[in-house]
Image 1 (cartoon, rainbow, N blue to C red):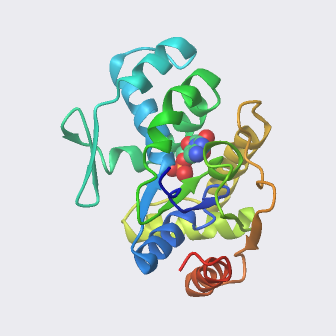
Image 2: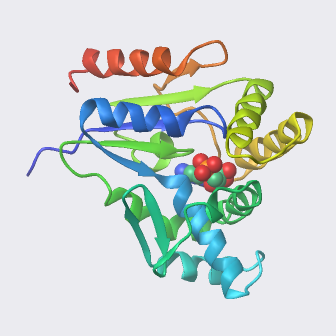
Image 3: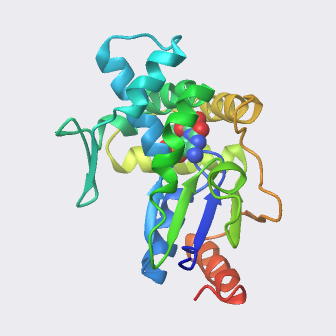
Length: 222
Ligand code: C5P
């Protein structure tokens, strides 16, 4: 049997910095990256586009199984159309969390996510990477930050993109999404057993990345 592909899972709530941290860790190690949230966002986008509603799990799962997705040059294409920006809106994130609560959709996306594990290694970013998708990963990280800090970071990100927003509204949306992601019965957001929990509220991205790379070295992954 061939050696297993090493996987580092990075799970946590929205706005904890997972995306940026995962990309930096993958870059430093020269590993692949799985943005599992994008798959849920794409599924929700495709459900909306197909005209079906968000209350039909078997239809949503069918759509998830048939997603025609391509990741290229930092962009995401659905049915050949560049949807990189369209799937990043707050609305798209909320719709994603609705389809993500459906066990049928989660099952439909499972093999797809596992197939992303390729040599030399994979950094998997999501909510259930360490608990469900890659339970045997040698390094599991749970990255968190206070809801206020996460709302503030999101506010700055949107401002940089020229999108006006309101911190109080963002904090309320973040709490609502946290609540839905943590209380659902299918793969709820929770630290995996043995996960290294990092609270990034008062940390810089560099510090978080350095902490994870140190943990990877300690486990002989680099
Ligand atoms: O990480 P991102 O904000 O792109 O994820 C969007 C939504 O997709 C999350 O709020 C969550 O509901 C869902 N998700 C999930 N499991 C994952 C990744 C994302 O349920 N592994």
